[in-house]
Image (cartoon, rainbow over all chains, first blue to last red; front, side, top):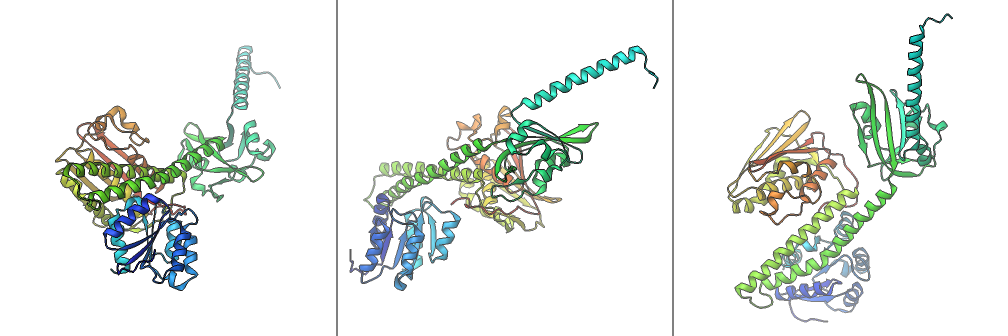
Length: 130
Length: 388
């Protein structure tokens, strides 16, 4: 999965395959290099194995193997990982979840069905400054 | 003591007494046989009668209750077990407002300390317009409460599940429309646009269903903040500009010049303005007039939204705030509608401590009024917010 291009790397963690495909396509067409992971564990394995950390993380809240809070806790165990800008894109955005994720360092919490991919990509670009 | 009554009067009194005894036996058997708990109290709020259902439902015996002050004998609590403030208790309000009060929002505590959801009807007993007591009829609605909770949870779960395929449809049709998967012909583009728009309608429907299930379950957060209502309404109008322009409708607004900041939940109240204005636009023909007047009267902020639209048929007007209701004269003109908007609006206004009502004439137009107390809404620590 290692990518040597200069395009900003975005780690996408989304357990719905169809959505992952759509996100991957949009990011590629927008000039990013997406790394697509269908589970939290795959994403953590990728982080542990890569030499160059991604520029940002696009995270769904409910994943097959853990939820967003657990994933953030895993990221916190590594200083390098926890400083990667992270955006949550979920279909469940209760105030509790939103607050929990924002207080743990997520930059934004977006409701999936309310956003066009293009708008999320814009948010992402703003977040990482590219 | 000499008998001063003549035989005729004596006979009449005996008969009257007999009739009273008969009536008493009738009423007493009726009260003891019915399935609802019935409890009555004197004008000072002291319990004077309880039927056997009261004992069965609450575990208190007649002896525990008779002669006790009602509010000391019965503890009314909310879902979290917090004592309900006295001003929200049906029996107090029946005495205070001299009218029948019903409630099915709260719980009573049984003798063993456990709580049960209760449906209460409190009625003052009036004689020559003087309160001589009150009757409290209640029943345990645990089963209805559980079914309602299951229904709400089902809607919430189903709606969340629906959002995933809806997101997939939204994003893939977006990719097609953007040409990210190759250029489409004009006809193909129009077709995909139709898919996109229909999907957006479905997303909106799911959002509304979720909002309703949140508000009905009482889990919604009410987070009042000092709010500039003028600013809030201006933002809503700005968002609706494309629709107003599209139908060449004119919107006039007049706001009281010294409107104070009001302590309301801006997210919730925004919904109310958005819904009433969207309806005014949608259900008025091209070139219609819409007027918003926001005024202050006593301790209330009154918002009035008037349109020159299709109106609501007179025989259907009482159903306006019912779930899924759509008036017969608009279903053909505007197929896009769920019949949930006004139901949600009504629920929001109620839970914000306000009131909403309307006047309408078919083919002439409709005016909605809603009032909010200047003192603002009462905060509620819920679990979910609207639109999440």
